[in-house]
Amino acid sequence: MNDPSNGPSSADSASRRTSWLLVLLTALLAAAPYGIALFHGFVWDDVFVVVENPHIRSARWIPRIFADARTYASGLFFPTYRPLVTLGYMADHGLGGLNPVLFHLHNVALHALNTALAAGILLRLLRLSGSSAEGRLPLVVSCVAALVWALHPVQTEVVAWVKSRDELQCALFVFIAFLVFLDGVRRSRISPVRAASIALILLLALLSKETAAAFLLALPLCWWLLPRARVRGFAGLCGLCAGSLAVYLLLRWFALGQIRQTGYLAGGFWPQMLTMVRVAVRYLRLAVAPGDQTSDYSGFFEIQRSPFAMPVLFSGVLLVAVLAAAFAARVRQPLVSLGILWFGAFLLPVSNIIPTMQFLAERFLYIPLLGLGMLVAALMSAFLSAGMSPKEIIRRRRLAGVLAAVVLAAELAATSLRLPVWKDDLSLFADAYAHAPSSRRITWQYAVALFNAGHFERALPLYRDLARDMPDTARDQISTEAVTGYGICLMMTGSLEEGVRQTRRAMGMVPDSAAPLRHLAFYHERKGDLKAALEANREALKRAPDDSRIAAKVAEITARIEQTTTPH
Image (cartoon, rainbow, N blue to C red; front, side, top):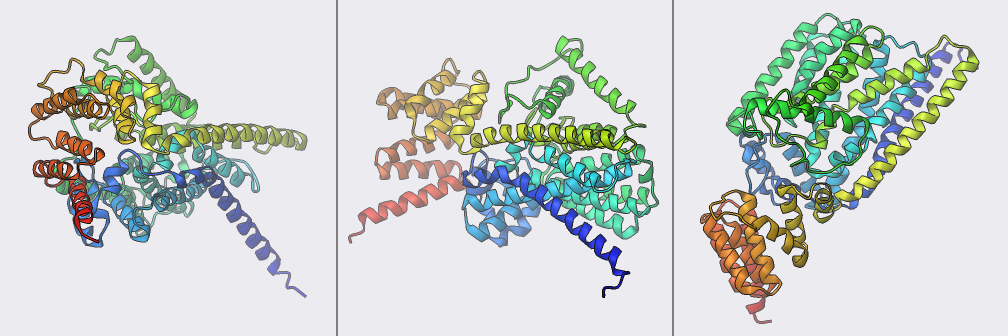
């Protein structure tokens, strides 16, 4: 006969197993739509940070990865310091070389794990915010809200693009640190060991991406909005986390030589901030109505120079209204307030107060969108709370189930439609060009994709439009590569004399640039003249001795020439 005293323990154990299974199912459902991404190739900046990056191919580079930001990518200098992400690429390369399946699988696995962590965070926040939902209902609500976050179509850029591993990895450490913090709150004390652990995890998040700095805002927001978060040891925790940020900034300065990535894209601080008011509204729109997505928002935003311009005033009023709603909800629905303010806090690092390289990118919403999950969890919990008749409870649960199913199905459909765009460069930039054909940068990217795919006739008019009326004094990358591409396309389509003239024009625009010679070598290689291609690549390598792409091409063509001249 069984000991009756074992009954409750067995019931608790069964309940825990069921809870774990539900969270596991949630993570698997989040990962399932991204199975198609495993068959995608490397796209866009993947070429620089992975494919042609020699620093991910040997563990001997590990010390330098932490000391030199130039190890982040090959060829071009990316003003970026994310050494733990480079280590992740190194691990992938060590396991399977440059097989893109493994890199994409790593991304999808991180997204699934982050979804499970998000469900845990939402469950704990529901309990801390005073939700009256009973039984297993808070866990179900948390899992549904986590799926709303995970299946959101804006997340496709992060999960389907290998280069966006930084967002996934940063989120992993931020979510773990936040869970450890919430567990301390549940115990009514942040012990010194727990505080030190959270600070260390935060440092790992910062070494994955600087967005994690917003964690220092998330902590006081919890203290303000959730009275149960005002526990012993909170001030010490904030001090240690500030120390982690200071350590990161010192490492970044040592490796990068600067804190910011670039100058202000709008030409100054105030025009940048006025323009970012409109960008902030676009972020809100992407969160609640994510239609008309694109991979590159270059040229989408007109530079704003007056605070009294109607677009700025309208956007400013809308943002003030959102903040007012968050403030108004702080007492009755603190988790709603926290969700709204979490969204804004984790966008602050990319708000261009400290300038970055773009106004807006969908990948920047990966962590902020957990605020939407908080909003969904709070509203669902309030709608399904106890205090109603059994009949009303059943009716509301059915209605909530139908609404959740409709939202998740819509997200799944939008995500499934968006994923194929990230298959290869040609698909990606064709989509971006369809959204912004007037953008000079996007037109150039699409022309390069067509060029690399061998569609010279289709690339020719794009290059011609870019090169038209361009002064020979232009020195920027797009100008010189547009003229070079135009010349090579002319040659490949039979206009040899004009093509040579345009290529020489590009060489004159930037005499020390390797790009025209590299493109000229491409032309000779396509025509089968390997010796001319080798000579052009060698000249290009003299101008860019650190460019691993050109060095690899020299070695490849040299080997091919030796194979053709060696007697069998």
